[in-house]
Image (cartoon, rainbow, N blue to C red; front, side):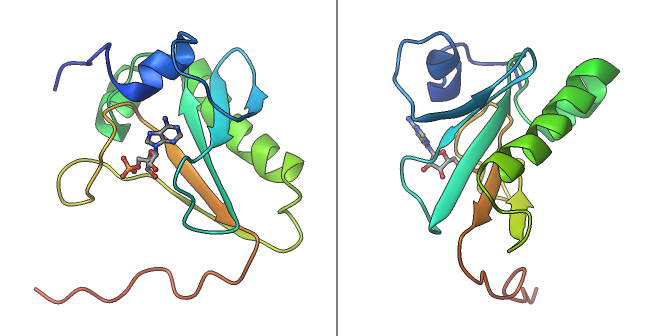
Length: 122
Ligand code: AMP
């Protein structure tokens, strides 16, 4: 899947759409989700043009991969979630219902989140 430069997160990265920024460094930007599903719901995105984890693991540099995951840890720490705990999640592709075609890692926290996933039967 080719990267769409008009996706909403690309536009946030270019400053064309506002966001409630939590953290930024050379590799990543983090901002509050516009439709939070938990008391804390923040998205961490790489600054590079990557559609999903498939694209990212194949094409990102080691520095970009390390930078994104370091940023996730820093954001959770900045949000005060280290002690209470939090969940990270990245939807990739159709079966995961990925809506925005720019890789993003959700951070959920601020309350007990329940089980990891409702069991899916085929
Ligand atoms: P996903 O289903 O993993 O692709 O999640 C996309 C997420 O992006 C959803 O949780 C949306 O609420 C969130 N989202 C969409 N547009 C914006 C925006 N402009 N600012 C912040 N979050 C957004």
